Length: 305
Image 1 (cartoon, rainbow, N blue to C red):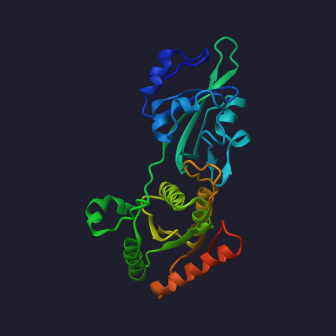
Image 2 (cartoon, rainbow, N blue to C red):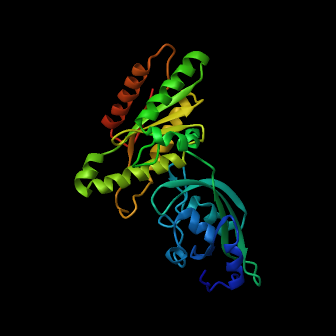
């Protein structure tokens, strides 16, 4: 790792940072990045050369909580630079490929040995263990049965149909609650027409990856067809489905496509929880109706009823 001009970072300190399991970066009191260890490279996709000397902010790190960008006033690191307090938080950051990943962060101040004033800060962060679905553990056995979407790497429509049927049967038998979210990428046809189908494929991969990293291991994600994706949320109330749908809108709104930083994404979402005695077809009709309501009301939003 290249050395920095900071008085509190020696070449040996950089070597030690590279041996840590946790991702670490260090800034001076102007938020200029002075160190970026090997684990940070692996977690974020950004190399040392790409970030060293740059100011951390929306384009580098870009911490968020829900839909709120935390840079400056709300950022844990910025607050520590101001008051010298240690902080911990759970936020998300944007990977170099564009998708957002939830992380735990711990921020500590760095002080000038002579004056005791705040000279910078160190942030230690690690990924929150998430997966799109417990079903992924079965993919080795299921791949030969074509249950995996080749483009996005998530479950395909066939697997989604089977899972929805199974969950609805469990709801009818054991009152096992769950929520359904159906979403599609806003103006996806326009993206294909303007930028080409290869960029459209990158969009679907980025959206799928962001969703996958922001679901619980017990939830389920599949490509329902075209630019439509379905999420099944295990053991949730109607209010919880609404809250999660809103958060996922925010996640996708802050997802970027590799090689196309100016392309802005959003999804429209329709959601519901099953009603007693409701058939799978009736449930999907309600969800689809809510999806179109989101589109008619301006897109980039969720309708859950």
